[in-house]
Amino acid sequence: MLELHARYLPIEDYAIIGDLHTVALVGKNGSIDWCCLPRFDAPSVFGALLDANKGGFFQIAPTPTNDLRSSQMYLPETNVLLTRFLCVDGIGEITDFMPIKDDDDSHTLPHHIIRSVEVARGSMEFHLTCRPAFNYAQDEHDTHLTEQGAVFHSQGLHLGLSTNIALYPDDQGGVQTHFVLHEGESLHFMLESTTAGAQAPDPLCEEGYQEMFHSTMTFWRQWLKKCQYRGRWREYVERSALLLKLLTYAPTGAIVAAPTTSLPESIGGTRNWDYRFTWLRDAAFSLYSLLTLGFTQEAEQFMNWLDERCHELPDCGSLQPMYGIDGEHNLSEKILPHLEGYRASAPVRIGNGAYTQTQLDVYGEMLDAIYIYNRHEDISYDLWEHMRSLLHWLEDHWQEPDEGIWEVRGGPKHFVHSRLMSWVAFDRALRLARHRGLPAPYAEWMQTSTQIYQQIMEEGWSDKDQSFVQYYGGEAIDASLLLMGLVKFTGANEPRMLSTIRRIQRDLAKSALVSRYDPQCAASDGIESIEGTFGACSFWLAENLARSGCPREGRLLLEKMLSFSNHVGLFAEEVGLVGEALGNYPQAFTHLAMITACVNIDRALDGNLDHNPL
Image 1 (cartoon, helix red, strand yellow):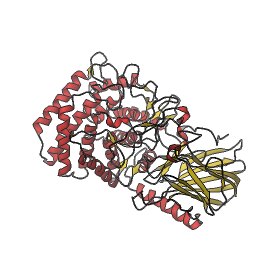
Image 2: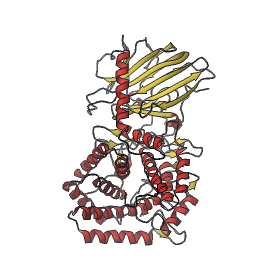
Image 3: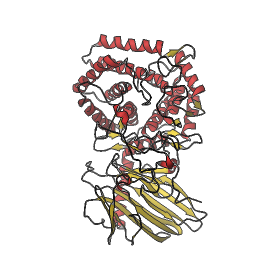
Image 4: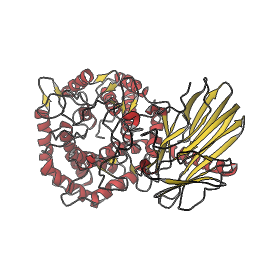
């Protein structure tokens, strides 16, 4: 029996819709349990994902029966979601989508969630509850019933729900109703962000609904036509591309790491972080994926966002690891103690204190991104000058310890991955300068690049374990070392790389699932709780196997990992011990690693793998 009113659905039981400003997570039980308006990083309006009692939700679902089942799918080549309910007496379907705005100004245009209910066979009784909880369930609101539906007025946001049927107040500031539909009948609901004092929008007539539906379908299908991937895993790659577009903030081109906050890396644990920001670490993977797939406009917009961050460098010349989607610098972290967290996994955090950390690898990711983009379109001289400033800063600081790719909170170390990406920064700058004839201190950069390379080979290598290690002086292995082959620091079939891959397979991998590191022997990350396996690391391992001359082994690992995606092809940050999704969801980094692995394993199987740097 389908648990329509389960306190918490599994994370993998959600799909996602959005309008390029924000998203909504829709469960297989017909409930929207996460939505922030008017943008990704705004406070939640529906937040039952983080507190089933207080968080707020918007559910449309049939009356429970013993034989009731549900499923979800996206309409082909779109982000329009269909949730289907089946029982002996009938089949009901809910179509959910958010219309795409022509204007990118999210502050002046309303945002809409369209929910259309239809019965395809027999008859079915549905119940509707719309119970917003504004500002992470911290703000009170007034609810008013109108002829068109209902309006919800809070201090900072106003919503209108329109429908052709009567709504009734519940005792928690929401509205509810129930209705019966017979075969061929449908009913439409529209939730709209409104202004203070406004009435609910007029109910959608059939013509108005069809216009919104078809324009949204057309937008997504026309956009996906630009995808140039025709390989073995087209369905997965196209779904990942559609997700990356959903996670893009249209006004700036920034891509959020994930649209959620504080979904735990272990149930009941404290590894709960806010991912509704843009990490520079994702930049190179994002640009490589977008350009490889043919989405040049999105790559250009994201490059413009990166360019703006370079124009904002402080006097010291350093970069933050991440920024807000508008380029905000201050991402102060705060705990919301009034929310219990997903399945009592506290604390719930908003903001991310890692923005203050020193993460030296981001310079390599930034330079790699610019190097990749320059293969599509020449970068400007002004941007090049900013890159020179970054490298001047890095020359003075690359030997310092940092918090590294995993943003540890247990103290800085000399992480090998950070040294690796510092080498990438100088390597890509040299390649770019030579290719374009740009002014640069070639000898100085070459000397630094050589020094970093030799240091990694000497201090980042363990003769005892015959592998590279997580940090200088340590013995622990780390899956981020798999990036050595992907950024062409070494050949994937170089003996040291091969033995490192074998050790990662032995110590960190269980079938297709790969952990970031073993917390028992790795650098302390300052957090006591455990975590799941890391999706991106699995795809890195698969690609390394393909690059090292074992494309069939890489393909098998890739196929196994793809089987851990959910019913609509989406991944969270991590996979748990029994295959459950853990961490923020859906996560861009995992899907970016998947796209890269699919593209390059395809090439390896076909014998035309690109051995140039990313």
